[in-house]
Amino acid sequence: MATIPHKHSETPTAPTPLWAVLVLTFLGSMGTGAVTNGFSFIASEGLGYGRKMNLLLALILGATYIVGALLAARLVAKLTLRKTSLTPKALLAIALLIIALACQLPILAQHFAPDQTERALWMFIIIFSPATGIFWPIVETYLSGGRSGKRLRSAIGRFNIVWSSALVLSFWAMAPLLGHNPFLIISLLGILQLLMCIVLVWFPSHPPTHLPEHHEPHPDIYIPLLTMFRVMLIASYIVLSALAPLLPIIEDKLGINVHWKTPLASAWLTSRVFLFIFFERWHGWHGKWWTPWTGMGLMLLGFSACMGSPMVSNFGLATLMAGLIIMGIGIAITYYGALYYAMAVGNAKTDDQANHQTNDQVKAAGKHEAVIGLGYTLGPLCGLAGLGISDGDPDSFRIWVILLVSASVVVSTLLGWALIRRDRSKLIHTSSF
Image (cartoon, rainbow, N blue to C red):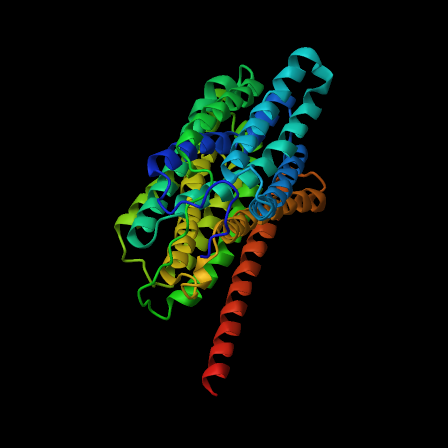
């Protein structure tokens, strides 16, 4: 892409060292795992939050993440066009420092103004979520910049395994502190952000130029599969974000000890890592329609088992564990499918069109993260709607949440089919001339 000149230096073409990107990703995902996926455990243990408050906190987290992800492209564009000395690398460092400071708010309030601890946690979430929404699209741009073809696909494969493994580790690392002082977990994450700033030493000031890529011919079926998987990706985050705020309450109902809550909850994260590795090695699923349907079915089956586990006498814990593992596999299929077909189909651009540098890269990554944020927002809304309809009855609430989340996934599927039919109609209409 035609590189926009910078006041001090030109955009590099050599890729950022992969090890540096992966180390930054690992450390950053530790924080994402503990907060984005584990905030409900912290809020439940630290503030005694139940279903309603955890769902509201999840709603705010998702909504503010969308804002941050969409804001990332605007910030980078302004920095580039105005030729300021504030580079994307500097923006990453600023985001990390802001997160590091925000991480200290709950524990400082706990010690110096206990009556303000709850407010401090909400302030932390409101700062943390959009800051990470800015951070991750830029990191993804450093990952892809200067890489193409098999080199890019290999880097993205390692990227997925690294961030997903870090989430598992974060859930196990939280366990010893969860019952002792859950806000200390957040404070330690702040120190982690400072270590991440050191890793930025190996990053260039601007993400390297994204190399034009000539994609190999792909089967026609890949295009509708890409459309379906992109829509199903939203559905997967609806399922995940509906369950995450409720998981500590479910585990309380099952009598699980506080020190085992997050390790047991990591079952779905672990099964996702194994599916990532399996799909990377085995390619028999390529071009097959059974993959999105299997992913959707496993997501809903696992989610329903998790939600209904307290209603299964004597087998509640086994039902919960089985549900988490099954749901994790379904979510992994959906995520990996969306990623694979996006890389296989690519963007139908000429080399000149592909020569738009950092702005377009961050914009694309920002949209991807915003889609994730949309799912993170719709999930808690399903939970809050179920809470209102059930009038607080626990069993009725569980059934309503299962129905509402399932309906959201079905609607997503129908939307995917509608988009596929529209694209096919356009193709037939165009070919008739």
